[in-house]
Amino acid sequence: MPSDDPAQALAAIRAAIDHSARLARREPGDVTLIAVSKTHAAEAIEPLLAAGQRVFGENRVQEAEAKWPDLRARWPGVTLHLVGQLQSNKAEEAVALFDAIHSVDRPSLISALAKAMDRQGKRPDCFLQVNIGDEPQKGGCAVADLPALLAAARAADLPVAGLMAVPPAAVEPAPYFALLAKLARDHDVPGLSMGMSADFETAVTLGATHVRVGSALFGARG
Image 1 (cartoon, rainbow, N blue to C red):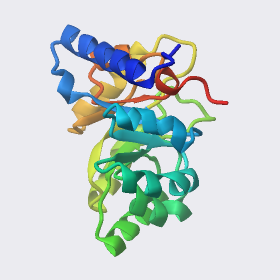
Image 2 (cartoon, one colour):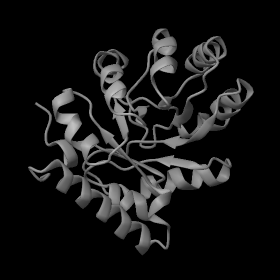
Image 3 (spheres, rainbow, N blue to C red):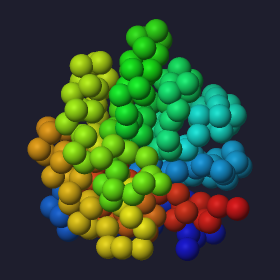
């Protein structure tokens, strides 16, 4: 459970990331902590901002539009990541609002994002989402489809920052993280967005460059 003190919870998560990185002989500074603030109001987010956290994640464009313009005006330097599924018809809004998009998983979305980026002259980092456990209820491209999706993203001049995945629940995540890391190496992709509140330490030891932590910082969503 997170501490009642947001600054204390944040410090504990950062210390755990540092420890896991050092175990893997990695630099802790190479791991970005994304505080996933989905469903949490501005009042719950501001204590983390006051404690120095500047990288946040949201699941939905509409929710982010409702709270982040005001927060960003009052707290400079925020980087905002879209970590939930994105509909192609929301590409324009997503490009305008977010600095990174972690759920690029199909050619139609690549096309919509490329057009929005060209129109706006703004190019958020893109992570290609892989359905690493081949789960029909989850977003992400099949492992076998990744080469074609990556080729399409590069051809559209999307800034491909890495791969993203969510392993199946209630199983050991390490093999899935290791597979995603291998895919990234094989395809010369630098970033790995993997690991959440329950398994971010494992993800860091296996190469995560971005971990998406929500409940360990904010508590269970209401």
